[in-house]
Length: 399
Image (cartoon, rainbow, N blue to C red):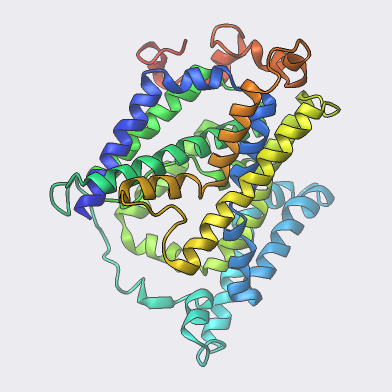
């Protein structure tokens, strides 16, 4: 734990430097809609192995949740005008509550008493005595596991994970801007967001949370389902998260929700996130062979290469790269196990090098559509969508 704390702190410092010093802003300035399509799409689509495979771990709970969410969000919300708030805004919440009660009934009826441990873990709504074993109140505090240890190998592994998370978070932010009806994020806003994400990772390391912080892909899909893009919702949600983390009994109740229910939600939410990437195709010339080549090769290899790395590690217990340097092995294996990261590297490099000098390329890659948003001050709507609340823009200006 102490070594992981140190690695998280180093990764957070790296991401904060990349963000606040404007390094990520330079990357975004050369990003076109064509290059954004593959990695925004694979930000959601690349997580397919967390979705329906998780549903099948308890098909009698996961499949009804998936069907019910689709019916509520995409059919009932349009058919029943008076119930549009329940079926559109609260479709996910209503689905979880109904299927959770259904899983509780199955558990109380003894449906899983004679089943194997894997099935019981996935299906039961009272697994592991998690509610009874949780304290009522628990206050996390810095360095609760002791002072952090900065191990060379762990730090490099976490830096690689931070780099992959940085790219996936960028894809998620683009998806959020699409579904919230906002303009394309100016590069300085991306850089600011990445910087504050780094600060959050530093706090994660100090408090020993074991994992870092990244933009939530499923919440981008949730924005599409609920059609709510208000910052006030995010603030209220953050207060709920703080409440459930401090009062552990209540958090344990939520943690007792069977995991296949979440997997069913992922099927819809990740799909919506991937759809935001496909929507960027409207800015590109799909009749161009260059466009087709960049899209196809980055999407195909963005799925194929990480799948190879995962399968290799599953069979042999270590990644395909196994040199004498453990730190190098972990860095390469982590980066190339992320579909969005592989797709982003390929699409960005190909888009910035392949036939870049031809006059028609600038139009084919959709550059003109995003060019006016490359500076915060070029478009008046940037202030409306991306200014910080409580007058914080004076202290953290966007350029």
